[in-house]
Length: 283
Ligand code: SF4
Image (tube, rainbow, N blue to C red; front, side, top):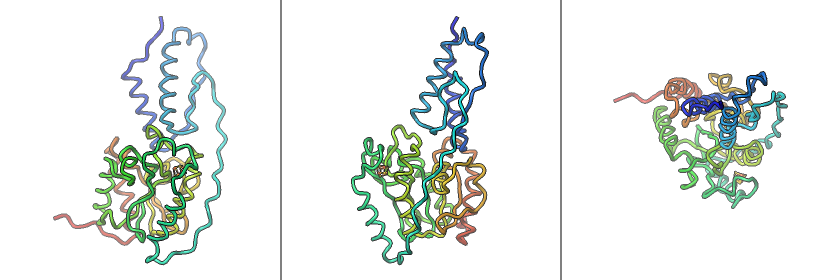
């Protein structure tokens, strides 16, 4: 008799794969199964396949393997296109204008497929001459509606993180790897990220922050030009476009797993040390 995958187990599996994705673990394989054992498991396998198909709809990562009936070859590591040359420094008084020029150049962008589902393009927000810049993955529903990055629940948490560092949101600059919302909040496809990220690099060149903070694995991947588990990138200072880069969790992940807030705070303290900041005294 066909076995049905328990819905609780299915949901738990889905959460577990998301959890791995947030950690930057994105390549999944299934051991070959004895065909004799498969006879009664058609329905269960169909459900499992549907679950992974769902996850791919959210597109956790292009390398997630969805065909569970075959051993998949190890995917070829894709090379990243070279980032644009670092642009000449812009005087701090001209940085807002320089950012505006980049925004005008982006225009009503149709350069990648994400434009089809967007309401508002989310360019960036904050001080054009900020010492600290945060980079996220892409807009969510609230950001897409308002045209401003990090304004939903994750944005509220980011604001709290900024305040805990002794800063105000207006004192930092915030942008994303892609400027249009991926459908269903899925991770941007590499092609979308590679198409949009040169604008992010130019924003970084204009703002010239002393410290960049990558929020989550996607931001870290496209800033560093290499795919690596988040765990291997946290806890140290990287260099990107002549700027120091710290990698931490995305606030949306911290909302799902608040136990990791302590770890994120440790990352932010590295950023504070690099900036010579001390946390504000509690009153
Ligand atoms: Fe253009 Fe970037 Fe939006 Fe794609 S995500 S349509 S490249 S602005």
